[in-house]
Length: 121
Image 1 (cartoon, rainbow, N blue to C red):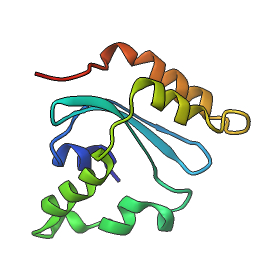
Image 2 (cartoon, rainbow, N blue to C red):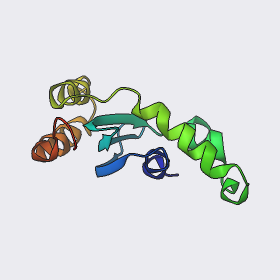
Image 3 (spheres, rainbow, N blue to C red):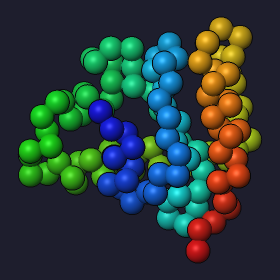
């Protein structure tokens, strides 16, 4: 599974990416896309049937002729709205009282704050 590759296929540059073992399996990415940079977040489910990437592509779709086009389209869905640093910390913190990975997600976001730029020339 590669949400990271899907966003790259859509034209994003991945600045930082990390998977977390939260209750649903969650990932965070700092990206630059279409002249802007910001945070993107998604989950990969707690089982293979719950994972959006696996549901869309299965395990052997890379050999299909329309794979790259489908991969780019899938990645664009995550890039429609980039979060600011403040928004990312707020979203990552929402379950901090019970999600054991929430603190690590917030830490990851804060550690990469210096890489976030308002626009890419």
